[in-house]
Length: 392
Image 1: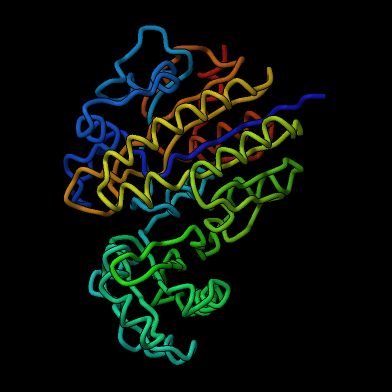
Image 2 (image 1 turned 180 degrees about the horizontal axis):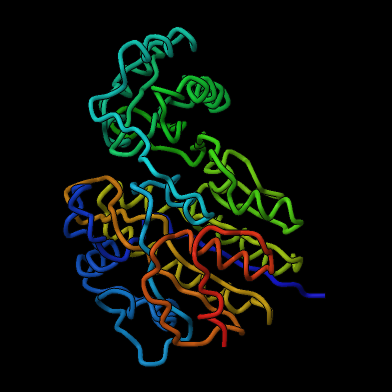
């Protein structure tokens, strides 16, 4: 028997316009969708456009439609942040009161010394940097000496880059696990990220064997709540990493958007058990937003649009498809960091009222309240559900 399934697809970094407090984050003028479209002369997104994406924010090539085929709206982030962990945790009902610490001048020398001694390797860098640039800058010295490239960004991250021929990925993961154990308390970071790369000087390339090591959520998330009530939860992409493996019955690690959507499509075709399938499409952020590549960003959006159209065709009568994002990452601004933006909200399925405007949600946590109601789970008190609003 076909049971209710919800496919929650997060287009990582695909923001829908600056939030009112964007100035506090240095993000005035950010609009990932709108600015990307202008930079490339217009986007072609017939699926999401038909669902009402152009009704949420101005997007060249994706005009508003009079009769959207989905419910549409946008969500504001209540937590004081603009990073992956904060955004995903808030979607699952965990709103942070304080932002994660950041390290605009690099990490404390004492911490770096302890880390270096613990992993028995030297450290290069220790500064905020673009990942591709710092690898080009320090990669040759790393290959000569075996010292690790450590860097951060405007986000709360401790990133460790190493050439796969110098430090095999499994060894790099062990190094990052050591860092994860150290980076708590006064030296807290939200994520430790392993950044393997290959190639030769002048032609280094980061590989898809990246791995994130997140803090464990400090409180119950909707994934925990569902797990305790027999609702199957499936993570695709880096969801397992973001939630430190908690609250997931199944997990599929994928390295790029195409593999993520192929996995989701396979689940949609083959697994009809009642479940929340929670997927992150990382390429928008990691490959294009942080590298200020609007053309690559636009091409990835158009590819995702086709995959989402295919996924919508596999929905059963009780299924829902929800498309959103975790923050912005505008590839057209001087910054290479995330941006404080609203995120789009598109909901489609046979039981959805087409063209229903869900407005601006005050928190990503409204998504958690909605999902709890979809699966008829009483007792979840975080966020404000829009389930009644989107139903026919």
